[in-house]
Length: 176
Image 1 (cartoon, rainbow, N blue to C red):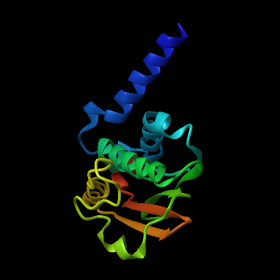
Image 2 (cartoon, one colour; image 1 turned 60 degrees about the vertical axis):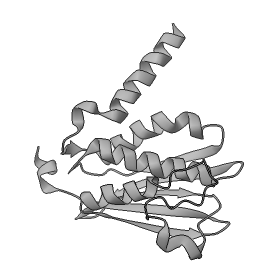
Image 3 (cartoon, one colour; image 1 turned 180 degrees about the vertical axis):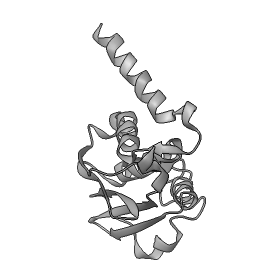
Image 4 (cartoon, one colour; image 1 turned 45 degrees about the horizontal axis):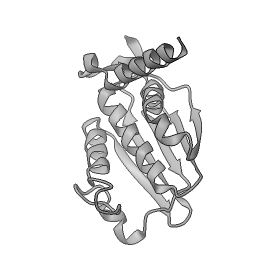
């Protein structure tokens, strides 16, 4: 019975993550996108990292939830892969009057300054051959731009990296 419950939970999380019925723009809470994505990538994370969630009380906004799930999946998987041995990933959300912010920080190897201006280029990767396509951050950047937002990165080699996503709060979402 416990196994059946676990399978049921996994299926529910996959449906929430893929949101096949939600391929259109709609009012959504970014925290819910993050939670469903964390549930999907948890097996990749749980033995390697301490995950700290600091999710603020943010308003909904009009977005493509399925695409936002992809953004957080890419950022979480990259953060996890940047950490050798044990480490920490912190996910934080907050807002101001115009925008919602979400940051994913890791205590991984960091990104060298020499490649920083190329990390959003398609097919650029610092991973060894066969370990990455070099498309994750490029896709993430495109999705955020399509949402009229931006993504910033701060990194210190040997200390870690923080990606901060900003998307506008679209007013109609507050009044649905």
